[in-house]
Amino acid sequence: MSSSSDPAPPPRDRRQRVQAATTGVAMLKGLASLGGRASLTSLAREVGEPPAKVHRYLLSLLEAGMIAQDPLSQHYYLGPETIHIGLVAIRLADPVRLAEAPLARLREALGLTCFVAVMGNRGPTIVRFEEPALPVTLNVRAGSVLSLLTSATGRVFLSHLDDPRLREWVRDELLALPAGQRQSLEQKGAINSLRRDIREQGMAIVRDTYLPGISAVAAPIHGADGKIAAVLTTLGPSGSIDVDEEGQVAAKVREEAAAISASLGWRPDASPATS
Image (cartoon, rainbow, N blue to C red):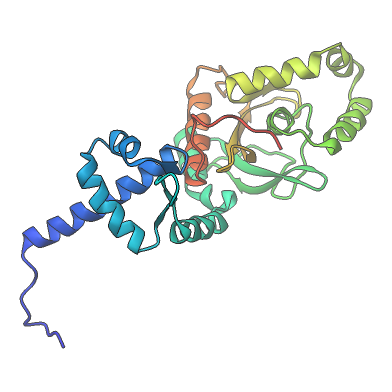
């Protein structure tokens, strides 16, 4: 039984253990980067270590169940314990919870209203809403359902989802729009062009289309599978918010949306997905 008088392990031993753990994690990350399965040679090349050293670490990871080995090809792949850890992490990856800190940062940095929305059973729905010290009077709050066609939030969802419900909602929205807005959106290919532009820009910008005198910038939050999980939006008075796609607001919204996506396990180099 140890006591407070027991000598602490030498600093060198602690450094060695930390280094060993870091190298083991690098092996797992290397396997993941290679698609979860690789030969010893390929993994050694990926992590930049000699094959003999990689092999020693792989033996330890095999014993721990973190990786497994195909008896025919001799390739290594992520094992049951790693899969279990990943599944637990996925269950904890709630975009609304993970957006709390980024929302606060965005509000403080820009002094604008910010919110996160998810796709609900009636359309894009605000689930987390943050206001600056001097809020703008708006008729949207947590629980508000937004337009797919005229709100920046809705346009991002529209551009990243392939859901049969959306076609019905878009049809109903078109009928309710003022004549001018409806005609521009009903032109051949107009909505498809809008969707393509938003995907290419990585965000949607609207000026006075959803709320008079209000402009907004919105960016997608991606899940680990690349599909859209939520949308991050900031808005403010059209005369005082910079909605240039290369401006500060757009840059900050994209940055924070990417940070939340990374927390959910998304990687920017992954192929885009629709749901």
